[in-house]
Length: 389
Image 1 (cartoon, rainbow, N blue to C red):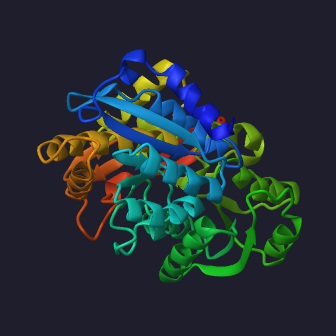
Image 2 (image 1 turned 45 degrees about the horizontal axis):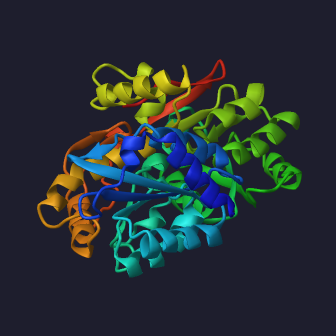
């Protein structure tokens, strides 16, 4: 039996039996989930799965069946899982994946199947431009541009003049490089070094030595989950004394555990839910974010909230908000329902989720504005609110 089917069986055993009770296909909404619960992105996938296990057993009065598969952080497996979910299971919507390379690879499958996908990966390239391949794709995490805007402003306000960049040698790193380099120029930040590394690398000493030779005021690590720790640890071990910034991709408990004292004081852009308790009371997202944080921590313990859990809960809210409109057009399990669900998601208006306020349209399949990001800081081995919002 393949690992991804074992994950599916584990989820079925965990969810309330009523959720998976035998019901007519025409009355049951089927949601397929493809995430990384093993492999390099497992730290992201684990908190995503935790949030999914809290999803309600009904949406818009209809029973829901959740089918969860593990792509093992692998592109080929992600495509195979998506074909299974759309062609064999005939799900009404796909949620996931967690990583940008996997999401990009899944675009052709969901387009051919005409099944909406609410992805939990970050790169804007997944949904921009909204062409024939991307018409069925929507995204929960904030765009790189959105996060780069507040990050570069924070650097400039802190007096940073020169900066070095080290990021993943894949679509996530390249997406960040593209947006960060443009905004850095606008903020008069001079980039003095640019390096890449693979998610599975065990050493970045060569890259770090080049960065330190350039003597930057600050370094941006454009990576996610535990692999994002490696450049920062190496910089600290080599005696780098400048500022170190990370992206919103670090928002996992494993990052804090592996990073330890080496990541203390790190500044990073983040969604409001990650630092909900520290948000100003006037923040328009705070109430919704705190409600979810309390629900999540009641199930998994104090200080367990992550960026990726918040995104996953937002995906549920997005689908639940669109479902009543789609149900007026057709029954679940039909291509008409899938099409109507896609259209309803695209028309989402003023929906407050833990990570911001969503207003989508045919040219914008993210819909988040400045209310979706603040600056966070790692303090006492916790993600805390720093400023913004």
